[in-house]
Image (cartoon, rainbow, N blue to C red; front, side):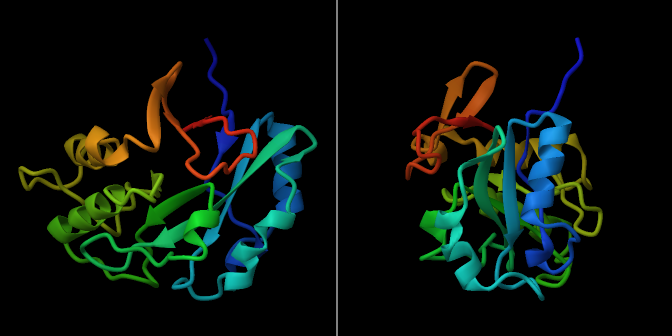
Amino acid sequence: MELRALMDLHTHTLASGHAYSTLKENLEEAKKMGLEVLGTSEHARMMPGTAPLIYFQNFKVIPKEVDGVRLVNGIEANIFDEHGSIDVEEPILSKMDYIIASLHTPCIANLGIVKNTAALVGAAENPNVTVIGHPDDDRYPICCSCGKPYGHRAQQRVVKSAFDEDQRTEKYQEGPGGMQKVSHHGAHGDGQPYLL
């Protein structure tokens, strides 16, 4: 059985300051690849050269579907401390369909294995964070509770935190094919959840 990608939620455009395509070009490529959903996730305010606040506030003018590809609007938040704090707040927070939280070198230094892990777990426990971005970035080694460097147990700890039922009952539900995000603010217009 051949698997195919149905969505890509971690994409950037010229608005992020370090990508080289437009939203229109990304949508065209998504269509060519057979994607059903494309997410646009420009970097939040702490990333040098990123889009201004008005960019995210103006998502309402972008169609929710273009040439058969559903478009969801997100943001890639920057984790900026060992507690997993992110640089996204209102009025942007409630306007996003999803939020990716990531460690980025312009925004936070490598804090060491234990604190890097704590930062990712802290971000994953934030009820507004939907996805942890590139937890395999070797510039930010992470560990499991046993103190050993990065490995499958560390990823399991971050994933467990992200899907902890006590933290996520309002945003996730089990569905066919796995966990589904339930849009808590009508993000898609149709009120339907989308697969993570």
